[in-house]
Length: 407
Image (cartoon, rainbow, N blue to C red):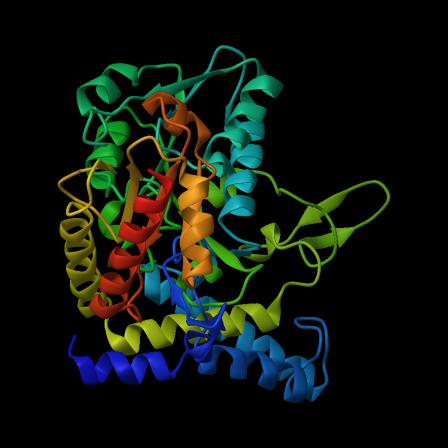
């Protein structure tokens, strides 16, 4: 990606011109949430000012136009993920709700005492806690795939965990702490050999690499809009039609019903069966606009440029004395986590903030992973296509200064 194109992209994100403590903002917290381009915010404004009406139920013009926009957004998500049918896309509040939906509904339909669920050691809390809740509810066991010292999953150990009691596997596509890109296609293939379905947490994958759910053969795939330049509070669950038809609704209310009497309720067809209540029809169209924006730039071009940024940042970080990079997998996405000597990551993050640089510190909602490494947390710098090598250079000089002060 050339300098001119990057500058054009940066111009689409007004927040990047903000000053923090009289310093130019450098935003390296993209794994937590991404900034929003003008077109996404304008889509939200347009929806509320010109197209706002509750969807699916109205015969009037605004309701019909809002319904059409919402369903076009669903089609956009399906095309972005390479799904076969738009009915296989369920709008949710984000990755967390999507995983909870599957954990509850799949658990109700297919799980019993003595069964097992497999996750990995590097999961975000949102892909641990819902499965723990299922295990507590059904007297099941949670099994964990370990990793090696580089931050790569131990595939032989994974194979040994798969057995006749395994009901579902749920793994992250990309680690939000280590940046590791997991071999999800192989994870899915091995599970399918034993007729075990797999859910993939794609929150950290879809903004950075091309995802095709049919090519992966994923049974469920989930992501959040705010991680990919869209609004907060909206996300999507892809589920194979056979699974979505086989599991019960997650919530009850309006829209997810076909008929209601006091004696019995019958449920709506897909995808509405899982979308109780008024959906975020403004958010869905804004998220679709974010996906359009990403596709216009080109996901392959984004992946190549962000890989370049990550490699450059890693190389420059190693200039710093007592630097320890946490996560050195061969296949990595745009995240670098690190520690400097015995300095607490929180102290580094606080001082970098005073210099206008936003990074994330702590356990990054992956406390079991951090505990397994025997560390208090990390400093995490995460990159997006609007970041630059010049920003990384400023970050490195600031980090050298901070490390010198705290050593």
